[in-house]
Image (cartoon, rainbow, N blue to C red; front, side, top):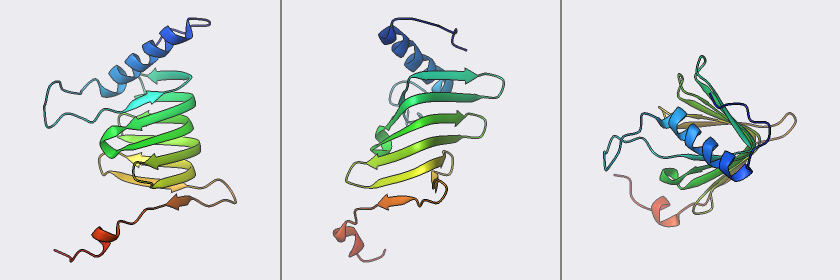
Length: 144
């Protein structure tokens, strides 16, 4: 777990946090051009912590998640990665934007890594909002 720093150089703390997060979550990532290599996800936030007992890594404050393989960027107040369950939970004003114009806004978004599923929950009394750009060429293509 990261040592508890009260005041440090913000830039050096940022790099330590990013490196730690990458090692804690994606330590199993292979090197080189291994086709079985896990995708790289970058998480930026004000604070990141890992609990080795529970296997939960938490990022809080101005969270930005970049997932180049899916061509998306997500922002939220908090992100938690449950390593034992293969589940990522984004919560608090979640905004997911995918290259090409697709977008999702919700209070909470759960991404199930192994099944590549996404579940979005609204805030109380609200609705989940999605913007989906439909490619007319693909929509009109004959079924295989």
